[in-house]
Image (cartoon, rainbow, N blue to C red; front, side, top):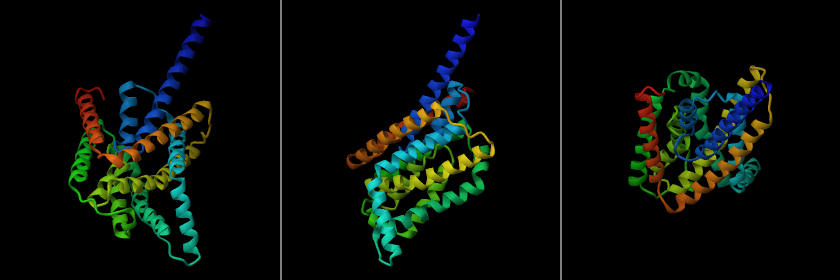
Length: 282
């Protein structure tokens, strides 16, 4: 009897570990691809009937993905820092201007998130809505990527375009939109080349993920449940590795191809979500 109980407990632990490991992999791979990480992290646990992973896990995978994007773009971030130092010394530098553009693009999502995140979490998380949003924004990405001009580089990015990108990025609070997807889409619409649009979208993820992680941590702190264990450490490492692979893949992909493969994936994912929803399985 005692052995049976111990075996059952061990199996439960293995299942929990497996589900946290899978979610860490999903978070890492989907955070930077234009396919919406939030839709995956909402829908897959529902389909699999997995328990809620908890705020500690959410903070851990945010740390992992943030670390990945910082490591990948460390040279660019160092150059931005040099530009900022020169700006503080009274010298103009285009690298400092890039930092200003990042800040401008981040402001709208900070404002919308601060005032409306609870509303979005309560009213915009239905499977049906996520399915339709996943499909529609995939179609937008395809059409705009295919027919937009490709004449602008990142050096042409001005404050007006940065603000427009920021307003559209704020829409990513709705699951299924995809932060990287919508920011790349609007940058392509404004005429920026694929690689430059993707590059700026990746840089935008740094303050966005950082602020999201801080917000989650303060919620966790208020609950007085700040406890980290080996499982959470593993989630951080796994999300870091998979996110680094994902960023590397995407940046190489956009140098030689378009976003059609991601659009096809979004369409398939959206139809699967809608099918499960209309069949009453979500």
